[in-house]
Amino acid sequence: MNPDVAFAVWSRERAQRIESVLDARLAPATATPAQLHEAMRYAVLGGGKRVRALLAYAGGQLTGADTGVVDCAAAAVELIHAYSLVHDDLPCMDDDILRRGKPTCHVAFGEATALLAGDALQSLAFELLAEVAPRHPAAQCLLLARASGSRGMAGGQAIDLASVGAALDLQQLETMHRLKTGALIHAAVRLGVNCGRALTDVENAAVERYASAVGLAFQVVDDVLDVEGSATTLGKTAGKDAAQGKPTYVSLLGLAAAKERVEDLRAKAQAALSGFGPGARRLAEIADWIALRSH
Ligand code: IPE
Ligand code: IPE
Ligand code: MG
Ligand code: MG
Ligand code: MG
Image (cartoon, rainbow, N blue to C red; front, top):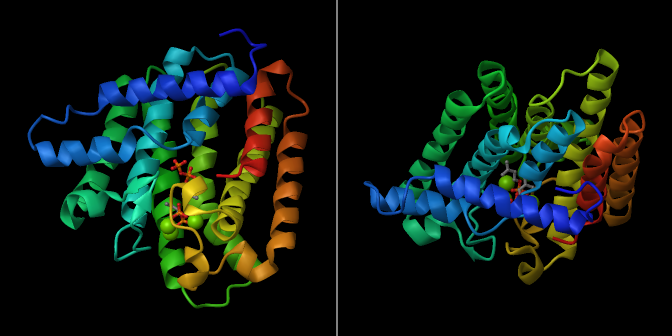
């Protein structure tokens, strides 16, 4: 696509693209066991901002990767993310009934099917990376496994659950956010970057700084939106962090300071990209979008 095209047009085109990739890779809703496949498709298709897929595509642009090569990395990270949301919404976790403007997966299909849908989405993510990732499949699988496991997303979720009603300090809160959300966002960028030319050590360090800043910023904004957003704009229940006694940037610092932290992280992300040329344009635009989004 023409590199001069506006971010809104580019992101819409890439969101449509990832939708078709995911649609093609998920089993048909009629395949046995039909209820499980229907639940998987329900959890993945027709919703979500696709931030992680967009980050993978933007990372690929930084290193001149073919978009077709980035497809499976972008799809894999969206599948892990969708699984994490299905499990996050279960009664034993956040007990939510609304996700992406629809009833949550367990409300629509029952808890057992939702649990299995999450499991199977995780497996499908790795199947995709291992089977069709044309570049470095083992390294890509390792990266995604680490980001989503007990030292990444799942570990962050465990800390989140253990922290209900607890007074975390800022360092502990940051660690929790970096794990539960930052790790997968970070992996999205890296998976995309890895699909193109190899970077120098200095460039790799800059990508790390960028990915780590946007990863944390994403969850701080999520905390802010839980307070300032509505179910209509968010497509999920608002105000639930306070209702459930979750420590967040807002509960610890207040709204104004949480927003300042987002600005600081946005500036860090932009500064990290300063040594790159026009190839970093989409990464820069996504950092602004993540910081300024309203849903
Ligand atoms: C929500 O993620 C859960 C978090 C990690 C904060 P998103 O806000 O990216 O959810 P979708 O994919 O757009 O629904
Ligand atoms: C979710 O954090 C993190 C993961 C799903 C890994 P939240 O619990 O804050 O996400 P929402 O607000 O329900 O989307
Ligand atoms: Mg949660
Ligand atoms: Mg939740
Ligand atoms: Mg939240």
